[in-house]
Length: 110
Image 1 (spheres, helix red, strand yellow):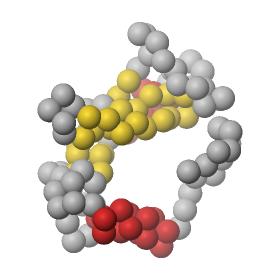
Image 2 (cartoon, rainbow, N blue to C red):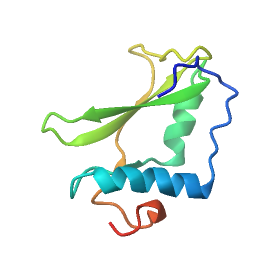
Image 3 (cartoon, one colour):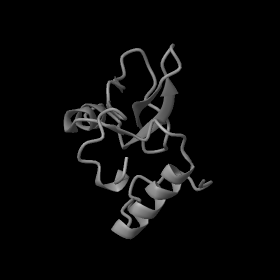
Image 4 (cartoon, rainbow, N blue to C red):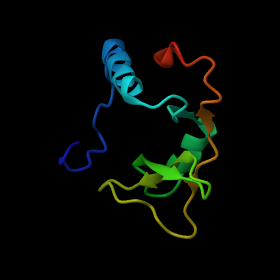
């Protein structure tokens, strides 16, 4: 976890090897059938970033009333503050893995 301030110019890229290692580290400790990933359409990111003042996106781990896991995305400003208002756009309705894991190459073996 980082204590660094939000940097809207930060380069978030990592290598393929790092990505595979990070995902496999999580999966090695996850319970069978546990939520492993969420896929969102491109338009979800575009909608968030089209908001005035949006400089990035924060992704929250969240939970439905029935206890099933999900993710909620919200845009953040250049200071890393959520654009949190009744008029803001919030994104949640993802394709979760499981059950929608086909094509998930970082999750090989699920």
